[in-house]
Length: 401
Image 1 (cartoon, rainbow, N blue to C red):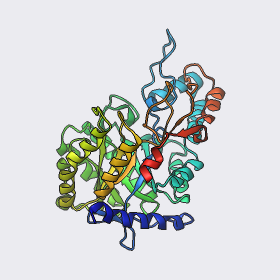
Image 2 (image 1 turned 90 degrees about the vertical axis):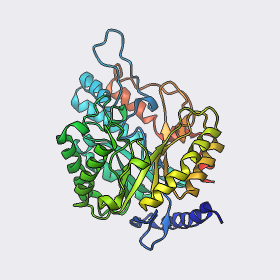
Image 3 (image 1 turned 135 degrees about the vertical axis):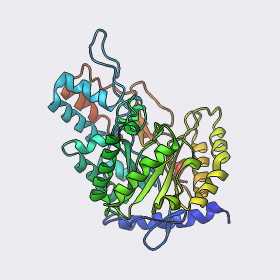
Image 4 (image 1 turned 60 degrees about the vertical axis):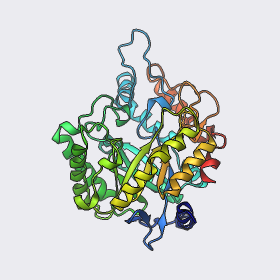
């Protein structure tokens, strides 16, 4: 029996047992060696999807018109901040809030969590921005997301996609071209306070499998700075959530640059890597690239004695259902939990290959923040419910078989 077989047996048993937990809290997860385990010590692999585009609007994969009309003084929309800034300048702050809430109420609904569970997954990764917690009702929105997922037997991973000041210059931090977390101690203090608050809110909630402390912190000037900030945040969150699993990302600096938890005095941590191969020329290149790193990553994982979670992965370009199946099997044979990027896509220019499990059945009518009225934008958002989408042919079956 190979390593994949030994890992798959407890995964299937744990997954089956989750069905009986949908009416109550899911079993709290903890770290035991290189495994995530339930309270009875049974290993479990987390297999899920990211809820991309929901609380962090990524313009490239959602149906927003992002180019202003000719001679307009309004800026091009690149990210969360510029999107809602344009709506607010046109319609006012109160209307902007109503439109933003309508987006969130339609892009992901209770039926989506039911669908994700029925598709064979056992968790969702929920990207959000630090600014969500400052919004009226923002924390309640996060609680509702976790509760809706748990109602359908799904764990949640809370993923801080945008840290105070921005942890890179990327648009998916909420605002492009900032990267100020590392260079302003005030931002680091805010990050500590944010996770201490989330620890109080969710630390004892067993439906939250883990806290992902920072998504893709690739703006850190070096691994040493990344380690210093992680250590500060670790110690802050441990004051309010002493037992919650914490995910540490490498920020594409390499698994070998991450801190050894025993040396740092960290407990109940797991490491998270993101896997993309944008240079792939054939479907098989994705599996080959993954296998080329397997041995080293497994050695590092064993040395650190921590689980490994592939928090984002996709096979674009050159993806096929068979390639998705092969890569999924390879990750699971290594005992690695994972969340595919992403659950659904609906770009204004049409089909996006396999970037989402679900896609629009036809080219959408773009939501136009520059011209549409409040009522028209909200009406278009109702058409963004997944009931109006289709599963990408073969994709769900290829992952779960």
